[in-house]
Amino acid sequence: MADITLDSVTKRFGEATAVDDLSLTVGDGEILGVVGPSGCGKTTTLRTIAGFETPTEGRVLFDDEDVTRVPPERRNVGLVFQSYALFENMTVRENVEFGPKMRGVSKAERRERAVELLKLLDIAELADRDPTTLSGGQQQRVGLARALAIEPTILLLDEPMTGLDAQLKTRLQRELVELLNDLDVTALYVTHDQTEAMAVCTRIAVMNDGRIEQVGTPAEVYEEPANGFVADFVGTSNRLPATARNGRLDFGHATTPAPNGDEGEVTVVARPEAFELGDGPFEATVRERFYLGEHVRCVADLPNEESVTLRVDPTDAPAAGERVALTLDTDRVHVLTNS
Image (cartoon, rainbow, N blue to C red; front, side):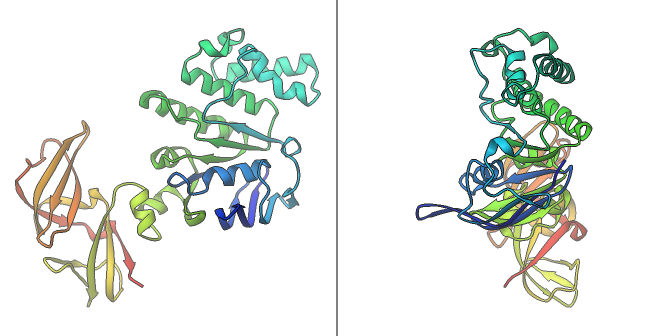
């Protein structure tokens, strides 16, 4: 294993800045997720760590070694791409053996290594198959086996679950976490899917416009977003303006206890589950209702023309057009001070 440090890394392409003064550390054996919208710099960051891009400014370190200008083939980094990028003129086993072969590993050893990895990933029976005949989930496993065959200290995954159906994605996420923990490899997991990152990763870095907005555990990023961008990008949030004074939050049409001692104009970040139907100070009219199986998502309008998204049990879900009273659990909100 190795830890990864990005020290004030900036990457420009002509006049465009893809990564802007980014500093980040991935701990030894950690799975760090990097999430953010398209074009925010996620993949450029990954390619810089891999050695396919050289920073315009700053340094990349593995442990205490500066690898900023070390070529990719000398970094001992495994790569798993969105497209899997399997060699179509090779069998599954030959794909897995390719990396060790390029590094001069003997035929017997690289075959043994390939067989072990294919067994570990539960695809041993596919060893002699043409990769083009495999399903997306099977190709994903082959791509992972090929990346692990070089016995990397660092594993970089770029949108590895894209294109898989929801049920398969959930199963592979669980298996991937168990595998990485067993192998003691440091991993950087790039995805636009924040739910996927929360399921797989130890910590999450949220990127926007080439910068890091917040780094924290999935719970910290979800429950205590650093700013409005993080609140909106990670999960569903209701951002409500309020005035904090004397231990109360005044929303203009309702008041509640304040969860902390902030004073002045604030923004209250309330996730859908923070609201409960019942006798509460908030009055709202349900505008939209979406049945999602395990719960119903309702969008309701408040008297000041703000709207809130609610998560409701299907047995209690109100109909569109129905007026409801809402209680806000202020122990489950996060208050952002307006600057």
